[in-house]
Image (cartoon, rainbow, N blue to C red; front, top):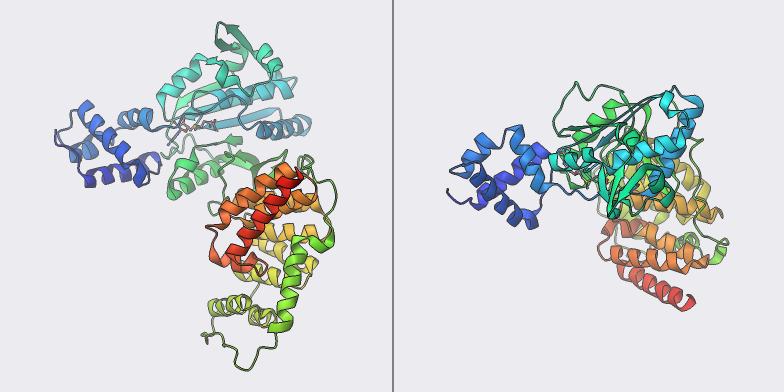
Length: 495
Ligand SMILES: C[S@@+](CC[C@H](N)C(=O)[O-])C[C@H]1O[C@@H](n2cnc3c(N)ncnc32)[C@H](O)[C@@H]1O
């Protein structure tokens, strides 16, 4: 057998991305090299080209590869908050909807996720036995499916399962927990690759709820988009879509409303004229903010005050002021000019530069909103954010600006909710964490303050420069990091 070359390993990486959706960066190349050599030996391929062209295309070989490449970590009732949200959805359905429910668990690993769904259905719908219920679960990896069908688990898989649920649905023998047949029989398992189109399976509108958690985070952007499109197509209008905590649909699909209830995020498919399930939705009651921030120290005020101070100096530019570069008269040039003026803190002129632009461009809407924040016009800024969110509901920055405005209007719960949404939608975005930290600190919740400020401090080190310009309230990167450190010290002293 001829040992694989660097080019062979790269071709293997591309083939894995194409056939299985999985993304490997350069750190993963050593693993791929070993796996390629092992699979060439196992399939008696004389050279990598032979393996890649003649053996790897077979579905059975993809199945073999998945045994080595799958991340299989899972457990019962993982992300408990999402099961609370599911509980609320099921209750609503039990009151109003037809007694029929189709649920999909995509990438079910060893079965803990679909079985948790089955348990939740049993717990929530008293007459579930009279319902027409189908839970389908699939995974690419046959080893996980074997374990799922056996229904036997170690205590570690039940680490988040309350004792009363353990007593009701499991039989314990030694250190093994066997799941009750009544739950096992509710789930149908099959081996399936989410990357492969199969119109017979992905029939339009057939599922009411899809769980696809902690798979797509390992996918290439293209594979993720295609898988989401496939799942969106097979979800009924108004149906629900659950992803892992570290996953979101920003920049992937505009076909869903974002839901934020029970301290967690999930999605509802658009398309039946309903909005984001107002009845299920509840604001985050668990956030411990004990009293409103004094207006003179709020982050909103800090931005508005810095802006006002600078505006008074800068709106009448000195004779020798450097003029922004002349730009051709196009919408993009207007935006560049407005950003340039904003950066020079010439807010009035920035606003003028935007005046000719239509209200359909997310960047200019954001700048418009921040110009209104700089004038302490939170109602106006909120309304611009609403326009922006109508265009792009998953725009993290719009949620952050809404958080600033809500804080300014004294609505701290709403501010926290929008900051959390912004941080969820864009995990690299430092500002919402800073804002959450400041709100928590002033509300006396030093543990939350320390966590959020430390996160913000880490993120500011690599935050996008243009975001610092737009949202930094006149502070630069170093100053924002210093602000985080000062606030952390104050929170440590207070705790
Ligand atoms: C980390 S587990 C997630 C299990 C469960 N959804 C959870 O969140 O606890 C990821 C699962 O996705 C499966 N998977 C990865 N690529 C897949 C593909 N192309 N098609 C179907 N399943 C896939 C893996 O085999 C693995 O079992």
